[in-house]
Picture 1: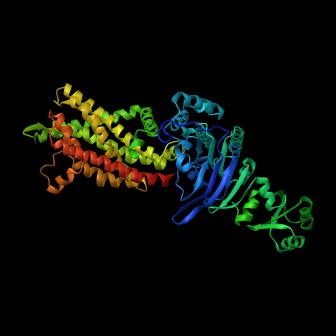
Picture 2: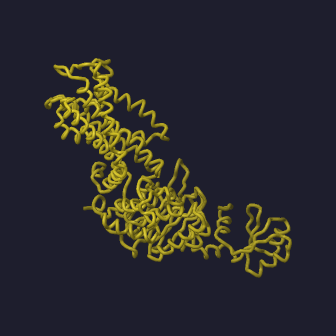
Picture 3: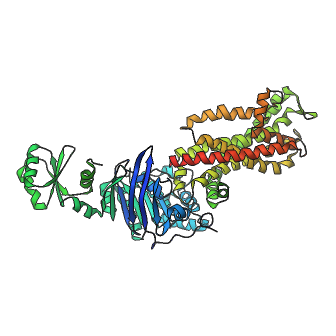
Length: 312
Length: 269
């Protein structure tokens, strides 16, 4: 049987696919929301697409797992071309989409086992995998419950567990922590870290800077379908700014002082942020003792504001 | 290409999901199809039938109850498939995001569409079996004298041609913006189609335009064939024409449903 219609070929396994995307394009009504986007992700890497709503993150992910047709570009998983080996490759992908797509007609366990059948897993195999995931994701107390009784955090956990039912090589997580409380969010971060250590390639979209900074090996900053910059989070920040930042209310006196000192600064939303080495910028606090000054390390949000001219 | 997908494991997986959900609620799932024909037979067959008296059929006369029994059966096939793929599919696509979730797996859009078409027809066949059970009871009680043995062939065959009705409903599922707009296909298309179908009353004496329009209605041909065999008829040459209309209805509707639903599913995902 051919891979097109027959029984699925098993995924390569955790040693395999490098995801390579070349010049991806997707336009709606003449406006390109993904504009010649290229990147690659190695096995066991967490790659984050960071950007505001409408940046093209979700559209990119939907193209990568086959829900949307691209207008141009090529996608390769290892040596396999997604255009020609799509059906085989889809069996090696796990998806947790931004929308709540849990099947509310089924129980928590049913959500896992029925999804196993969408990957052509034998019932016994899917049942065993579901049991494993129920334990691992702490969902065992809810096996016979319908998803509607679950909290937001538990629903997300179930959705991610479901995306792992086929033991994927690549996992797409589209804004997985949106709407979650800080505790549930951190729990999910730990889970993602575990999955990464198992060798799963994770492509994450988020508009939380901290999340991208903590989790990612590589961050790609997107805005209006275009890549603004990319790199490993610390390197990306270092490329644009000195390690420390002081943030205060914007004023003419402060602007004059920054200019005189020759420091890098960022102005946005009535605030000015001054960047420099620890000792270099600390003199600002003695120069303006009455101002309320907030001192912190430079971060991805600073990079984002610099690149796009606005905050997330 | 599209036809090959009908037998693919991905289509079977979507179909199995719907069957599983249906049988999870088996109590509520089986009561309406068993009760509805009983009510219809009591109200129309025995109630209204007492006033109508006999109807001319072929060379002889039959009671109204005998006339509508095959009609109820085919009407059940039509409405069940039509409503399931109109409301049920729309809810799964638009509100529950079930299809969006499935598209993130090994299953493709074409399999979801086939899964819905076959599911609509399968559910309709199950309901038709329930109606047949009620007819059997009526026969055993001596109320009717229908040739029910023919249903062993008629219901499965009818189930296959019912895919035209599921597909027809999917044309609207693919195009209406909200569930409120479903009233238009139901009241402007579904009900008129069932009126010119020979299910509840003969349309032979109607305006020639109506009888001509009925010739293009698969439900008309289906109820005609069902009635012929359930009243003890033997195969006749006119059935070939009816069979051709049923086949053409299936091919046309299934093709259109795939085309429109594919675009809608991409838009919704």
